[in-house]
Structure formats: C-alpha cells, structure tokens
Length: 136
Image 1 (cartoon, rainbow, N blue to C red):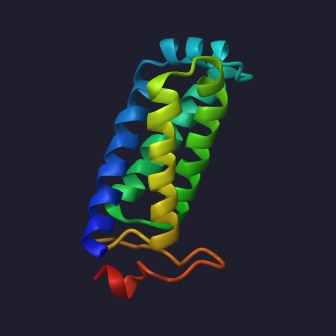
Image 2 (cartoon, rainbow, N blue to C red):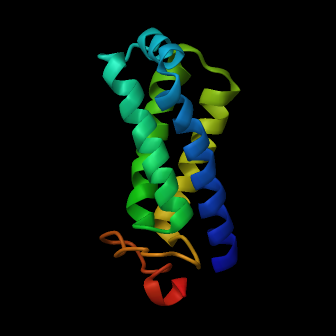
C-alpha cells in the first residue's frame, strides 16, 4: 500500500505543478477565466492559485508536510468545482477536479507513502499512516 501511496503522491504533485505553472507564467487567459467564473479580484486569485498549486504540488513530489499540502490542494479542487464547474461544467471541472480532490484527500488521510523528505505530523484525528517511520 505504501508504494501505491508514494506513486499517487508523486504523480498528483506533478499534475498540480503542471497545472499551476501556466497560472504564473501566462496569467492573462487564467485571469479572464477567473473573471468569467465570478472570482473576485481575479488578478490576485490567478497567481495565488498558481503559487498554491506549484508549491503544494512540489511539496507532494518531495514529501514535505505531505498531508497539509494535500488538504490545501483538496480545498483548491473544491473551489474549482464550485466556480468553474458550476459556470462551465465539462469534464475538466466536473470530473478531473473532483478526482484530483479525492486523491488529495486520500493522501491527507492515509499519508504519502515512502520516500518523503519530511512528511510532517499527522492531521488531528487522523490515523498516523505515512509517518516518518513508514516513510523510510
């Protein structure tokens, strides 16, 4: 199970890094989309979401405070469904985003498997699978 969690964690992190980079490197289209989806201050939200996805995604890849990064990314995917999903619908917003959110919750609850630099403490009220001992 820990090998599967490791693979899911690393691949999920790479997906988020890849999704966040365009928000930082070419934000104009993203800002237009955020405005269309009804986000206030889209000029601030686009880079903020980009930074969240790149930094938390990299944290997943590296295994640094994995559960906390996963919780933030799960919340981000809830936001994606409640904004883009409700306005535009479509596979990306109503299928891919919930799957990414569910995988993020999986990592938050079960931990990130092996090969983590610093998994961090478990979340309050959650079993301690994926602890430092399990990560080595």
